Structures are given as structure tokens and as C-alpha cells.
Image (cartoon, rainbow, N blue to C red; front, side, top):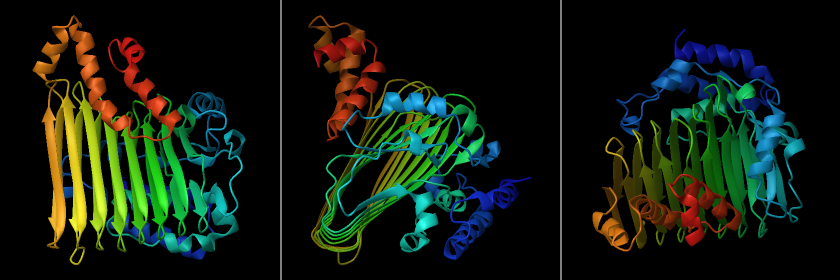
Length: 444
């Protein structure tokens, strides 16, 4: 049975158990997405967008849609205790093996006009509120279509006009070894901010080490005029996991989006992050950090569509690679005709700690307007010998000197995180991965 036949059979087996199975427009969307997947199958390296990332291992695994059960709640509860941001630090929604787990969630008290629930629950109670956000998008990958086919749950956050959520919303997705073994987990998240609304959302993926599984996640963000959204994504999947995710935003006049993506886990990761400026005066910041080693592979594809004048975008991605790991960065900034007074800056910097590590970096600018300020650049290198010599000459051991320089390189991205508890968590992870990290932490 090939991948297309397997997917058809898997959908036939699981369709009746998926949320919203009785909603006509959703059934049509699922069938349309399934037809798209069957027509194209998984991408291969002949596809320019997947030139440096093979998903043959995913295709070979023949993952099945996660079953309709809670998974290993004991293992999940232990992880929640470790990973929650702490009392009073936010609004927590927990998903175990792709399904909302109310017993582990602590949603807290939200202001009037803020509606937060699981998308599965919204399908059951008010599916009409979601229909407008499930239109097909040709720019999204075939994995987004596969997500539509098998999406079972995720988070839905709707902010009415002018609503401000002061504390961060923490969406914690846990893949457990028993519940996720050989499974494809398909979270779908939707964040809608009406005019002038503000919120911070943390999208956090973790998994226990065990059998391989695939997390295929999709998040859509809609920011109305003058809305302000900050989105953090932290990926700490299991060592044998595969993680493919899309984060796609649309911004209206004067809206502001800040996206921060951190990749630490999984044997293969693909992140597609995009935003489209649909009216004048939009702002977007896209920051990213990837720390990989062994034979890990991480691919970050970003796209910023300046579709209207007076837009501003800043993009800053950094990577640290060790062992035989490989990274891909493809950042496209597209300035459409008429998008005058655009201000766009993009930078991708990479630090290779091993001779066997590899990075393919492709910053792209496509400009079809003449009154713009746009820059891009990429660097790939090893630790600076002069900086190492400077530290060694002052009595610092070689191991400590190398760790200090790696920490400084990665810290430039970590310090951009404005949620103190999350920033502290990432600092701890960074220190734990460095030789003599605890000594460096004491000095910091």
C-alpha cells in the first residue's frame, strides 16, 4: 500500500471519530484537502521548496491518525508539572496526543470579550464561527492539507474589539510514548484578534522519547486593524519524533505581529512561517533560534508578503549546529507592486561547531516597488579564533571559552523574549547544553 492509499484508508477508518464530522462545510473542506493530498502525495527533493529536506522517512513510517483516547495521562501530568510557567504566569490549555485535556488545563480567568476553548469543542457548539478561517490557501504546504484531513483538536482564541489579555496564553501539546506511538498528531490552532486587541500566545510542543511519531501542526492568526499579537513557539519533541508545522498570519491596517520560533527537539523539523500585510502600516518581527546536534535536521521557511505601503518587517534567525546535524533557512520577503515605503530587514547567522554540520541558507528579496528600504544577509562560520585567543589569554580554559562564545551567540535571540518565565526556561536549556554551563550561568 503506497502513501496515498494508506492515507485514504486511514481517513475512512477515522473520519467518524473526528470532531465536526457532522458539519457539512467541514466535511467538504476535509474531502477537498484529501483530494489535494492524493493528487500530489508527499513532496520530494525535486520540489524547490523541499530541495534540501527529504520527508521520505515520514512517508516510509506510514503513520496512522492518533486514536480517540487520552493517552498516558500520568506521563502527561508529570510533564505539565515541569513545564507550566508557574502559578499566576498565564492561562494554560493542555493537549495530550492531540486532544484537549481539561483535567490538566488551568485556563484561569480571562477578561470579558476573550473567548478561549478547544477547537474540537467549538466545532461541536458553534462551528459557524470557524468557517471563514478554513478557506484553502495555495501557499500552504501539502502538510497543511493533511492537517485539515486529520485535525482533531487544538486551541481557539477569539479576542473581541479592544480586549487586552495581560497574562500569556500557554498552549502545551504533549505527545506521550504510548498514546503517540506510530501516530500522526494533527493540532489545529486559530487565533483571532479583532480591532485593537492584544495578547501573547505560547505554543509549546514536547514529547517523551520512545517510538517515532509525527506532529503535523497548523496555526492560523488573524490580526484586525491595530491589533497586537506576540506568538512564541517552542519545540521540544522526542528524539525520534518528526515535527512539521505551519504558522500563517494575515494582518490588517496598523496591526503588529511578533513571532519567535525556537527549535530544540525532533529528528526532523520543518517550520513554515508566513505573514501577509493586507493594508498599510503593518509591522512584523520574525525571530528564530535553532540548536541542533547529532543527526537532527531542521528546516525554517519564512515568507513576509508586503502587500500594502508603509509596512515594516524585521527578521532575525540564528542557528547553532553540532555533530552531523543539518539546517536549512529559506527566508522570502516579497514586496508587491504599490507597496511603497516598505522597510524590510532580514538576517540569518549560523555557527557550526563541527566539521560535519551543514547549513543551507537562502535569504530572498523580491521587490516590485521602487521606493523601499530592503536588506538581507546570511553568515555561516565557526567560533572566532581571535575571540578564543582573547579569552584563553586571560586564563579561561578552552572548553569554557568555547561555551561562553556559543552562549553569547544564542543569547542575542533569547534576550528578545519578553515573557520572563519563558526566557528563563530557554536560558536553562541553553546552559544545560553547554560544557560547564552551570559555571557560565553563575557568571551571567
